[in-house]
Length: 96
Image (cartoon, rainbow, N blue to C red; front, side, top):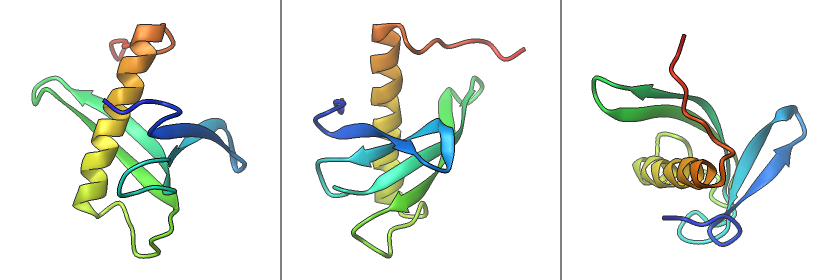
């Protein structure tokens, strides 16, 4: 599991006052800043689907199409959700 303030940090986004971006602070994608968009859970396939955008990166060719970055973002999102559930700041709710 990735850890906040060790592997990533949440950063405010000027253009989106109600959103947070994630700055990666360790590993292959260090100093890359991403922002998640839609996040959903598919019960039939038992998986989470999401999209994200790369806001900044030292690698000017890095895009959401990069499979390694997609896999890293999966681990990142899982870590954020699990930490939030442990802390009580994230609640999983059924879609009405």
